Length: 172
Image (cartoon, rainbow, N blue to C red; front, side, top):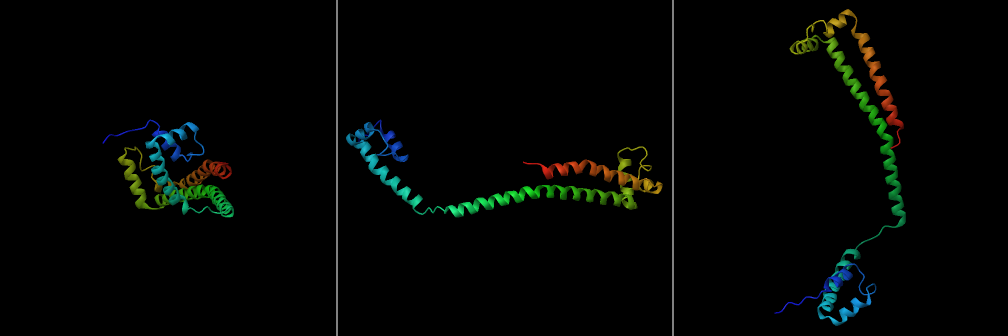
């Protein structure tokens, strides 16, 4: 059996798959298909297969009404606005949680002999020269811990409050 190819076969397939056949193709290609048996077979077979595929794909497709699309767009806009509004609140909650954790750890170290001993041994393990002088229990006994905690708390708020305000009013 002899295999015969046509040089215009790909042009015919392109016209069929793009939906241009036969109305939006040039006269030369239509005249060629009328005279070429290979291209005529391509039009018959590929055209039938493509129309079957198109019927299957788009036959069950239901396009929603404009009211439904409008409603979905409004719901999406509301959800995005809610997420934008919640972002500064989330930042403030994270900052408050971190501050509470830091305050709890500081209070536990300052008020518990076990945490003070643990801190003292850790500092001496690092090679600190006067670890016992820097221990929280020694600072508490000297009356320095409370002012240090107050100053540290004020410092944290001085640094973090502008960040919280920036995130609250930022337009992204």
